Image 1 (cartoon, rainbow, N blue to C red):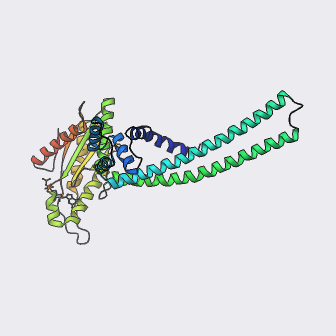
Image 2 (image 1 turned 90 degrees about the vertical axis):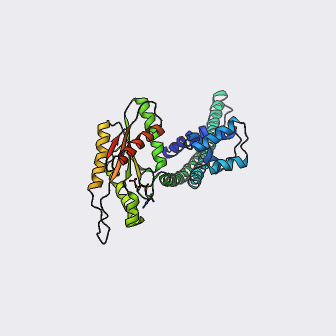
Length: 342
Ligand SMILES: Nc1nc2c(ncn2[C@@H]2O[C@H](COP(=O)(O)OP(=O)(O)OP(=O)(O)O)[C@@H](O)[C@H]2O)c(=O)[nH]1
């Protein structure tokens, strides 16, 4: 089979294996909205949604149209989820059609095989009564040509579907990119950060490897906005983001956590390495001389404060974030423009 189709089937089967039985069990109509809801239930990345579904299942509350709508409204950004679900649905439809084509061709191949078997046993059983050599040849040729056109149709079908799937994959990638990227800075957004944090904590727990979380906040940022306006404020945010990106190692994840708050996940690092990285970022930012484009008027010195926290066994993501946040708070209260370690 075309490897692209094979890959798509695997990808889809992974989700379907878990989502569809659940939706079937709870008699959920297979609409894109419901598909999106149960997709996130299976992923477990929407806490409020999961809690509401678990509550309904425990209380044996039927999943009425109203409840399904309520669940969909609990999704963080329904539009994007909907787009994703629609693409998923189209992908499924394609796969259904493709597997239909495969079984149709399979049937054809079986019938070809049966005919050959029959002709063969005719010859074996009663050679004299068997069809003449010419009739036999014609029958085999007929079956072969039928088989060939069937295979050609299937090939064309696969080619078309493969192109459609390529297009869907591109669209899915665009939706995924929008859903996980902060538009102002191009850094990972908070959702992407939360997902990676969960994965990295699971890795660190399983392999007993270190993981550090660095949290930064621009100092007196309100003043920058008040003095220079929000457009310049945005530029400063972008500058800090760029500095984070430039300092981050290949397996680090830099994210915009909130307005002027940033995080950096640094797996397999020692506390010294994590602290050195945080200090390097702080130093680069404080040393930069930011000016307004055009007038070249100075924006003044920009500084950041940072907190570094190391993962401790049995911590969950919230614990590690809180630990880094406390270190950041200590840095702010210690006078800003500094890194504190918790
Ligand atoms: N330009 C711009 N400003 C933002 C954005 N998001 C948040 N802010 C501003 O960031 C400022 C944050 O201010 P505060 O939380 O009071 O903190 P601060 O002035 O940085 O002071 P400290 O953190 O205590 O050093 C607020 O004025 C927000 O309006 C954004 O995307 N762009």
